[in-house]
Amino acid sequence: MRRRATDFRRPLRRRFPNALWWVLCGVAVLLFIFTLSRGNQMESRPVIPTRYRNDRLMEGLNITEEMLNPNSVSRQLNDQIALAKAFVVIAKESNNLQFAWELSAQIRSSQILLSNAATRRIPLTIRESETAIRDMALILYQAQQLHYDSATMIMRLKAKIQALEEQMSSVSEKSSKYGQIAAEEVPKSLYCLGIQLTGEWFRNSNLQRKTKDRKQIDMKLKDNNLYHFCVFSDNILATSVVVNSTSINSKSPDKIVFHLVTDEINYAAMKAWFSINSFRGVVVEVQKFADFTWLNASYVPVLKQLQDSETQSYYFSGNNDDGRTPIKFRNPKYLSMLNHLRFYIPEVFPALKKVVFLDDDVVVQKDVSDLFSIDLNGNVNGAVETCMETFHRYHKYLNYSHPLIRAHFDPDACGWAFGMNVFDLVQWRKRNVTGIYHYWQERNVDRTLWKLGTLPPGLLTFYGLTEPLDPLWHILGLGYTNVDPHLIEKGAVLHYNGNSKPWLKIGMEKYKPLWEKYVDYSHPLLQRCNFH
Image (cartoon, rainbow, N blue to C red; front, side, top):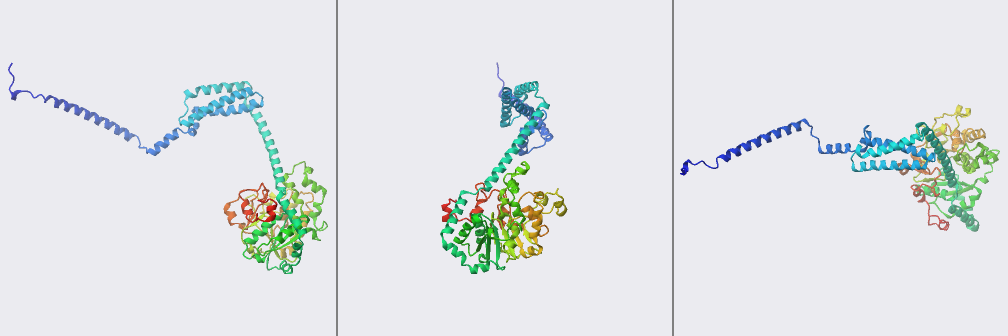
């Protein structure tokens, strides 16, 4: 067979380029169609930022959102658990311990399911929770067959709540009683200090002689150009902190005079302590109220009341009113005359014109000499007000069901604090403030106007005679509550009012350092009595 000439042969490669061309065109068309369809889908769906998509995903798996869904099996399980817990209480009350155990076991099984779902962040499905829901429904049905119906459950729960409230009331009363006992205790170290100082006073004649040779000091006791402070206390260490903190923070300690009044028992110890120790030139005078000849039952109504056997029984036992009066209103400390001497300051210090009264549970951390230049605008008492909204107003302290109180005093009048007070003794004598105090004490013999203490009669006595001071002069609450640190930092006088005194074990630990920094624990007598 003859072969074609070279020029007339069909090239072997011509067929393949045509086929390849058609294939490439088909692929291109398909890619165009696919791209066009994807573009339409992208345009029809809004672009979601990555962070937003993640948040939405987490929200979809959030257990709280799942519980808000009415069709959620997790919600159904939780509702069953809540009902089962109520039935457990009732079963135990009915002494059906076996059934209570079965309920508790089923509760635990359901809780494990919910916990696993929360851990993996995937909602429970009907399939995996079906068994638990069915088993729980069955046991709840059994509970209903045992007559654990809603009415029975409500009645029993009410009885349980009432029993718990009575128990809480009893525990609260005991807590108050034990707290009061702890607050009234005399720590062994303080008792030891009193014994040591009393022995030192009678053993060391130089101390007694030192207190007698004080002609120049006696002149200062009556000098109204000086700054006079008074403290009425039987607590030696607490009084020492008041004097020491005042002297350390004073710009002119040599102008300060402290007038201390105590009882017969602590008189020698108090004299010894303030004779042994010096306080940067501060003059300290110690007296005992037993030496005040004017202090007798014929002149002082409260003294007559304090000597009354019925009053003593009321404060010490509280049996006269079948226990209706809270324990805090029966504190025997109110039987102490030292607590009532604040109403007789003009008689105690007849030569003085102005004095600052301090409680023994305060710390002075600023110079307080400016208190003596404050204009009281003709009033007798300068004090920091304590009312905020409805708290610490007159109706909180006084019996406004009594017509005498209702007729004379505004129930919304603002209360104020004893513990740091500026007294103008000239105005006091002029207005016969002590006579006003006697008037109200004589009308409260049956304790129907107020229950306890010195603040209620103080509110009555100085009603309309009190000048409000800047609150930073007197910061209260360090003995029972939390106080704003900024107020503590800026305050001039810090008051540990309340049961948690800084020298007691029950004192609030975070406020103790503010008081303890004015105690010299290296003092030999304090070392001997284990102060630390």
